Amino acid sequence: MLGHTKCGAVAAACAGQGLEENIQAIVNAINPAIERARTLTGKTGSEIAETCCTENVFVQIETIFKKSGIIREAVRKGELLVVGAVYDIDCGSVTFLGQHPENERLIA
Image (cartoon, rainbow, N blue to C red):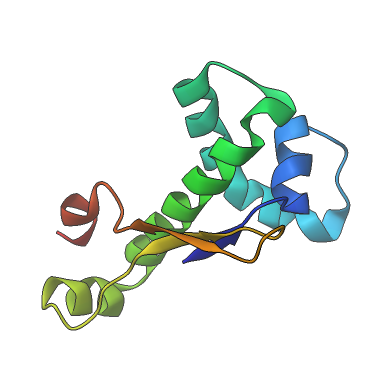
């Protein structure tokens, strides 16, 4: 799962800005990451955008595992490895986050 820095949807969701109808589904999927970022940092708004980007990668990994028994089983069997990463738009580098911190619980 790859996220990226300076994500417009993450920034808008973190700032609580009015959103166009077509992006609302994306923002709804980001909301759990916003809550995690708020809890982790004690901050709100644009101050949590960077943390939210990372947390969103992990939230989306959780979503994949929840929705796909095939992927969970492949990971359990060691046939597939699901890792997170964040692409830095400014410099073009990718920071690998590794497996979800709760990977074993999620694939059980």
